[in-house]
Length: 375
Ligand code: GLY
Image 1 (cartoon, helix red, strand yellow):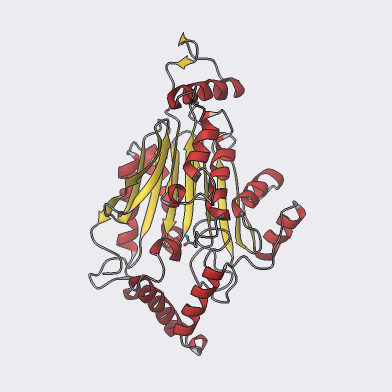
Image 2 (cartoon, rainbow, N blue to C red):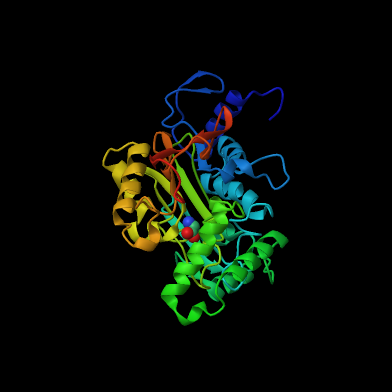
């Protein structure tokens, strides 16, 4: 930001450019550069990885996305450029390059994106070798008649679109953690699928309790939604998925309605956390539909968390208190730019990220339940 242009002037100016570029009717001007009667307050919302990671650069994801939105850029271009930062950051172990790999030690990435005003969407699942699956998801949206490409087909598409395809997206850190997990799991576990599931999950929970891996990285994901001054809404979700998953497992992140849903007339919801919970409950779609029915972003998000909690009955998924042994978080905004970050488990140190004309901020998540999923 230049010294001669303060943040508010920058936002207002950018909003005017955005409206003009969109061909929208220009609102009345009180004074040059000041817009009145805006329908929405431009903002960006994301999980905490949107503020915590900069890939060694000057900006985090929400700052990057907000700057582009305020400058009149396309909202999807903005949020994708934002999430590219943690995707490329080798110190972030749940997204893109260096994301925790599947059970064979291979990093497989999922992503989807939705363009609210264009009513377009794209996604990839189990994509190997491309550091920025969000850009491939966007290419699926822009260059195909489809919404989802998976596995080798997604990689072939990416190669054909000119993306660099690498042999291995592991970093030293993700490889070392995978080796530790592998060491703890019975090498014979494939002989008993039920036992394999229990042992694998318990080994991972123990590693979280011991502080070896962050819960945020086990189901690590970034979900980032944005709205511009014209009320146009776009969203993107990108992840390396569940750590040490069965090869080919796709979570909620590439699935429209599960890990992300955008309706330009209503709002957007994106998610991190246990993907299976969102696949079962189509939570992001549920949240947008609850907002369509009049609920606030916070109430809609909490309603989806309640639905997940009520549908979580298998003993292996419950903690010692009989509550879900996993976290799920939603990052929700509506057409007016009202927003909320909600989680199955809230605590002051668990935050999500926003960026407005006042800059980037870490905000505590509103929790449905107290304590930890691991208690
Ligand atoms: N939410 C990320 C995953 O479950 O894959």
